[in-house]
Amino acid sequence: MYKLWKCKPDDASHERDPEKTVNSYCWALCSSSALASVYLIRLVSKGGLRRAKSWRIQHSMDVLTALELRQSIRGFQSQPVPEEVLREVFGAAQRAPSWCNIQPWRVWLASGERRIRLGRALVDAAGRDLPSPEVDFPVTYPEPYQSHRRQCASVLYGAMGVAREDREARQAAWMRNFASFDAPHVAIVGVDTSLGFYVGVDIGCWLQSVLLAASARGLAACPQASVSIYPSAIREVLPISEDVSILFGIAIGYASEGAAVNQARTSRGDVDANITFVT
Image (tube, rainbow, N blue to C red; front, side):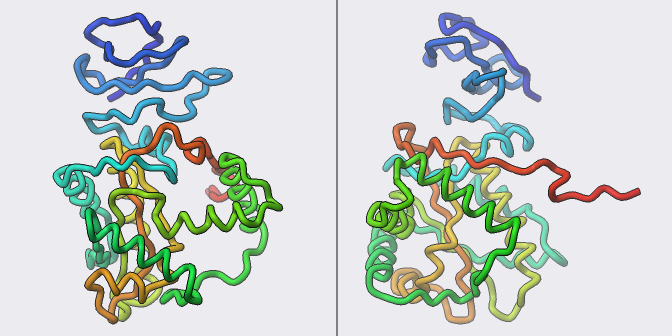
């Protein structure tokens, strides 16, 4: 579906977007249709494709490209996403697989005034209450999981310029979670408490579907386990019954290109670190 073009910034042919320019050679990733959407990609050392330079996407990208470009965004523009685009993203995710097709995800998407109230309630709770998640978090992380967590924290705080010993700055960064990084939309995701542990597999399939569909439509998103630790604050704002366990949130909007935190990019292990091929 996609082709790679090597082009100069002054190339203004009909197969390029004349509104977009860069200061050096770039890779333009575009669909096989010459007039379809154009993506400008940074050309980094040794020709690697690191991240999308532009979030302006008009047509679906293939799933492998979406997997490559997707990242957790923690700096958002205030501009809201049109409801029809949100419906398209969440509608596409309805195709996610689930055990016996039970479709167990239950989602409340807060926008506008309700989104503002939700953020205030969570920030107030985080400064006042003890955490009380409805689904237990891991208490310890044996290796190699602990090393992955530390590497993630190092990349994230490094992008923000926050030193390890700067407790005040680290606390301020932590509190940004409860404001959902000022994203204009926040989804709260829950599941019927009667369904037990295994339904988490279905929820994970659905979440990845949302994230990839969002990337394909030029949106930024960040899954957030942190907001679930104050379920009472969430229920003050959203009509979530007690027979639903609150699992996590998803911050959704358009990425802020100027946010330093959005430069954070964690690594992934080789396939052999997780997959054992047997014959």
